[in-house]
Length: 344
Image (cartoon, rainbow, N blue to C red; front, side, top):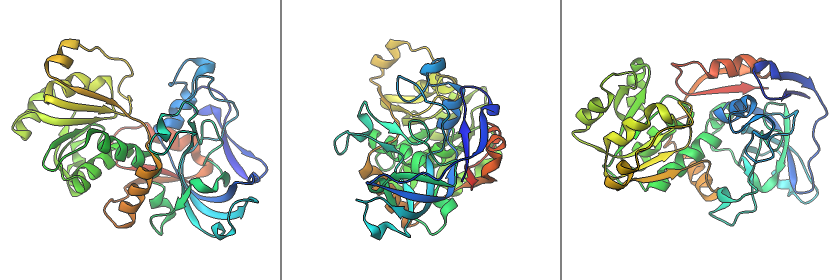
């Protein structure tokens, strides 16, 4: 089969198309013929070494073992079953729950041994992948590309919304609202939790589409008066912030949060380190949440919502698998709306 491997930390020249043997499923696994794999920040940051330093960069302290096939947002068809995997799985169209863990039910994401497909395991930049049968869920839509939009970004966004316990009619500020997680933060907060959403993007030409997806207001983070703009359109401070940006919008987020407000972060594309005046934290009675991925129960609730048509897949562009370098470079450009998907 064809696969794309990361050969070490560095630029896109570390991504190489190779020919390798099709993996054989272990007894509890199934073999999936991959039909689509959406791109996430996670595999780009893994390649760039952004999760740590040099050989210690990865989801786990020991770093990534190279070569590694990245990719975690995977859909496909089960074509072979291991000895203990039920044969009824054969022919099923599935979406992959993206990590293994020994954590107890409801706390899988908190386990120290969490291992991510595409980082600790070979992932979806390939024509086939083997994965535990119990981590293969029924695909929520008939379309492989559209279903690949949701696994990692969707579960992350869903978990963020449940963590801060969004209430109907509350105002939620969403940063990075045109990206994979941000777009689903907009939809989940507004359509499923009934919140009023203020979406922050760089390009306000996206305003119409974002409002169709549930945003009440769309503002540009490039505004020199951003905090005042947010307070004006909302008529006062916001109840919570769902952030994927980090440092670049951190001070503004805290400025516009109400007393007793909640700040939840799942990414730091705009800066991984920041300054915090602790007086702001305690004088405003703020609550901070760190968030990544989610639980199996949340994943199933997400897929159920997708299957019922409550969430809309948004795809910016697709690329053939062999153009993974170009796809990752395009992913990092600004002004996109939605997911980038690789097609084997």
